[in-house]
Image (cartoon, rainbow, N blue to C red; front, side, top):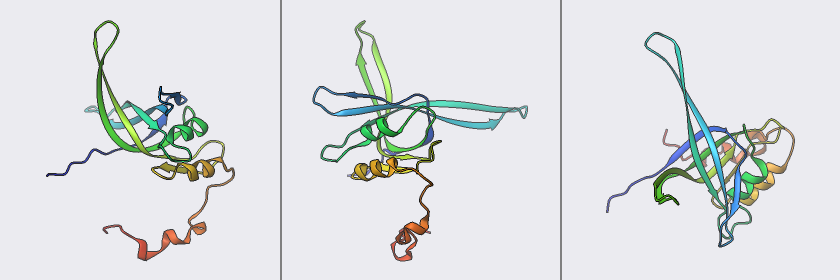
Length: 162
């Protein structure tokens, strides 16, 4: 059997506050609108820019003491810069007028808050880490330095291929 990979990584800004709702079975889900921009110079040397909007879906993981949807609701707001890692999904459905509708979504697996205007530290949220990140995201003050995490600099744990 051949292997395949469906992985998306985005760094962008929220275009609106997260939209959080509960499903019929009680699960919570947050929808984020994330903007990414790229810039280039046109043929005449003029600066060009294009912004892409991405629909990001954050589910609460079952069995976790909190999840991506809860953290998004509590800590994210319009304008915040985020790192999102997940997979891309394409869905179709038929609306009330019997028109076929299409949507492309990023199903988030990891969410990193890349700082905030209020001085709260960046926090990572993902599979199994939601509870700890919620606690980190709630603290105030300057971001932690690597000095506070000496094991992060341990050479024996370095699994980088270079």
